[in-house]
Amino acid sequence: MAEQEQTPELLQLIDKWLDIVVDQLHNALDEYDIGKLDGDLWKSITGSIVSSGGSVQEVIVKFMQYGRFVDMGVGKGMPIGSQRKLGKKQYSKNRNGSGQLLSHNRKSKPWYSKTKYREIARLRELMADSLSDQAFSVIEGAIRTGINDTF
Image 1 (cartoon, rainbow, N blue to C red):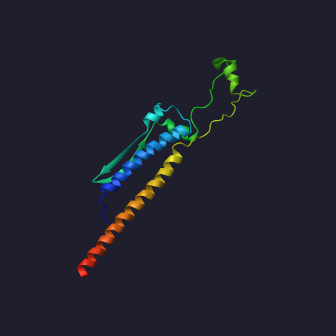
Image 2: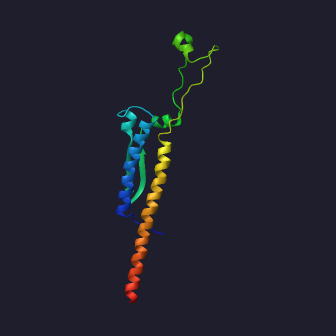
Image 3: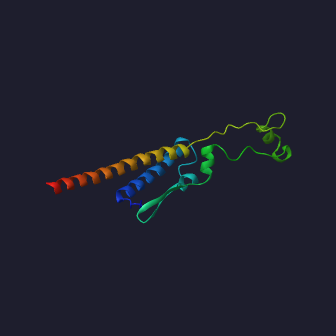
């Protein structure tokens, strides 16, 4: 089956959806209190649409890699080093009496993953609605044409 060209309305729908996704990611950063509103991660969130032959091939959302680490709650650990290198106060700050690192309270802040899956589900709904409306219009037009041809 040949791939059909997407309608301009569908391309506009995807473009508007992408703008909303970027705004939602900014809102999620604010909600989870991640970085500054004009910080590097905030500024790095961008979206683009790759199209070819009148149809969308990819929708890309980009941001700095460390945003994923914040999302998952991983990244730099506690300071490591000897007591001599760090000094007694810094060395024992995050260690027990045996010198073992204590567990830390880093938690995931799912600003990206929750937003991504929610917005992808929303795009599916929007596209299904749009395509079903188009299909209905085509069928309705065919019926009207068929009725006019028979009378």
